[in-house]
Amino acid sequence: MRVVIQRVSQASVTIDHSQVASIGTGLLVLVGIEDNDTMGDADWLAQKIVSLRIFADADDKMNSDIRQADGDIIIVSQFTLHAMTKKGNRPSFIRAARPETAIPLYEYFIHTVEKSLGKPVGTGRFGAMMDVQLNNSGPVTIWIDTANKE
Image 1 (tube, rainbow, N blue to C red):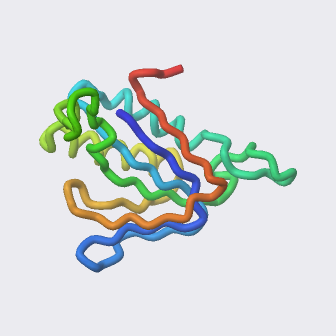
Image 2 (image 1 turned 45 degrees about the vertical axis):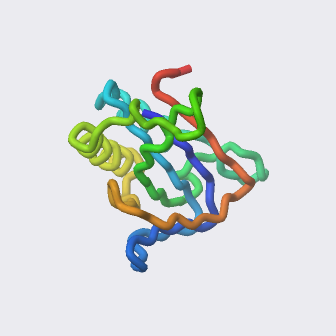
């Protein structure tokens, strides 16, 4: 699993001119899933995201996690995170998992993040054309791939 995490002061997801998720302070998490990703990867990643100390503490240092910041999360599926661009100019998405594999793991990941966070998260809709709007705070953008658990 590969994610891009953006600390936001505001984020929303709109599908067919209808807003389906909106948050203030929190994290926008874009997630891409490969065929070889597992529930174990989702568990590890969910805990890592919820525990990242990337919010300001009382001394204005990046030392608080999402729970301490009382923030919210939006999770959006994004198969393009697995784009291969080595050859030519048209990206290949061959490494991205097909929906029958990716959807159950995506839903499991959402549930696991909600359990770790202690509250519901906003989501996009798997496979839909979405407009994602955000105000990146900092800016803080972090990339994590479960294939490189360091």
